[in-house]
Image (tube, rainbow, N blue to C red; front, side):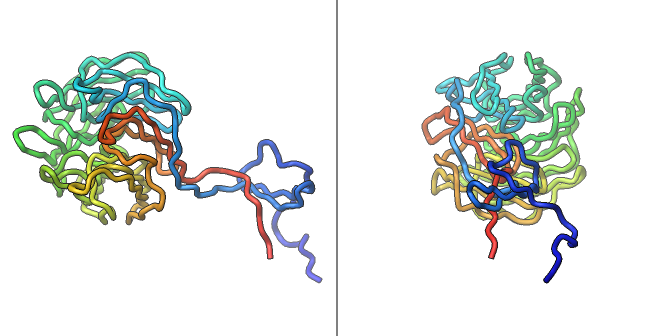
Length: 331
């Protein structure tokens, strides 16, 4: 007979009820249910409804995490809005408004330290930049190239702005970096010039990812590019052409969701990026839409508002993997 107690490992506790606060990797035997259980990461990969925005809108920017997000600007009916809302994982609260009403703008940062730049106004495009400190917005130095449908990522003091529509039928692949005071136009230009990339881009100032978008009017692309702080490199494409979708995560662990696949219309498809390739997830958004604000990570993302094609205030939360108690089966 093998003496299993001599093998390296851990003792399994026998308890009458599951522990209230187990730790990751903990295993126990529940003598009441006669089940062997453990506390581990479990892939759910599904969307669920969250709290509704107070201001129904599309084409707003987002920043932060799934449980501490910020949504700002956008189209609220026939007019553009300055409305800003803060999300705590359950409900949205209206906070101080932006100084410049606009939609299709770029965003970066966190819930309490955000940056808003570019967008569509009257006249059509703006270079205006604003900084949010958790209490109020302050107008700071503008982008060098005014544009809407701009992509953005990074932090409030180290942001990246790239691509977009500059007006008169012209698109740009220009890239700008923000140092907390000024924008600098970089030599790096995207390989696929486009506007309306999914999620407005994700990652950091020196490790960004741009995917999807509209390379010409009325079209959509699945092209993906990675930025290393110096150059943009074309990498493996998404499985679905889409523009104006949502996005979350990092350069090596991304999430793309929703958008429009012209001329097919709105889609709810969700894809995951592992740093090398995209994988289609069986479960998409509950409602197909585009122009949502988005935030979060590959495992805990947020989609708020958007166009279905009518404006919506609905929020959906993505759970990629969660720590949960699981029954362990043996044979």
